[in-house]
Length: 185
Image 1 (cartoon, one colour):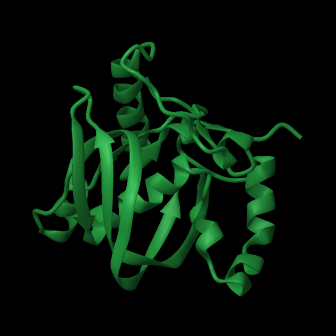
Image 2: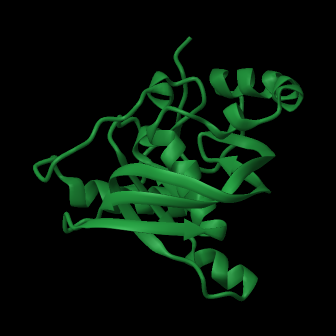
């Protein structure tokens, strides 16, 4: 089922998410719905806060980027209760966008590697290092479960330049092709 994506301004996007356990209700269906929602909105990652859940869960699929770029480096994964261990490597700029902030893109500087501890859908623990676009998507989605948005990482001048667009998104004045939930003013 395609779920509405919570738009910029929704309080859940600013909350630090809580860990879940094996008994979390309908987790398998929730993960399936998150993938369906992400694909419908043409995204490569989606975090639970973006669908109104303040839990430490995100999904990603960068394999779809391989088809566009002719590479074979993408991954499709579910991250439960992720914990950042370390970010390292050379900082690099990359244009990011967000399904919760439609039509806003900006070059964001992040370090090139992220080391993460997380659980998979079978509740197996993993400790892995990710880099390149995979690492970038993970850093972006990890920020969501920490209550951080990519616009928080923009240079102050660029951030001021998009304030009017952000206010429009808050009010629901945006053209999107997927269901969204806006802040009730």
